[in-house]
Image 1 (cartoon, one colour):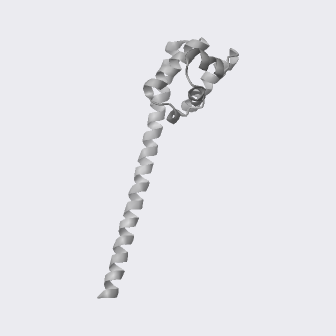
Image 2: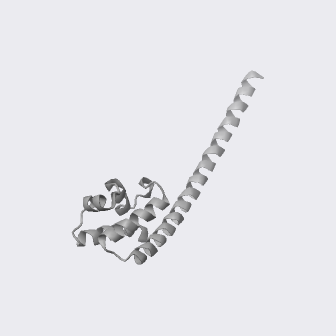
Amino acid sequence: MFSQRFGALLKRERELRGISLDEISKGTYIRREFLEAIEQNQLHKIPGLTFLRGFVKSYVRFVGLDDEEVQQQLKLFLKEVQVEQSISSISYFNERKKQRFLLALLTLLFLGITLRLFL
């Protein structure tokens, strides 16, 4: 899957050039934890999409990669992640819907039994 490879591709290119994350961090003023998050595809650790794009742009320039090509790959990556998150959200919504239905059913059942006991 492409989304699993985006960060790995950046990491591989960085390692091929013998550049450490600490060097990139010092040269770009991006915290190491954000650089690690990008290489590990952990978008939830990045403060926002604008920051992600800027971090990737700085990373790419420092490492010496083709900025346009990587930005295109980033767009594809973000589209795929968005689709994956949408599917995940739908699954979560359906699960929550089932839970609410069961809770409502149990509540009605409990009320029915309680009313029978007191009537």
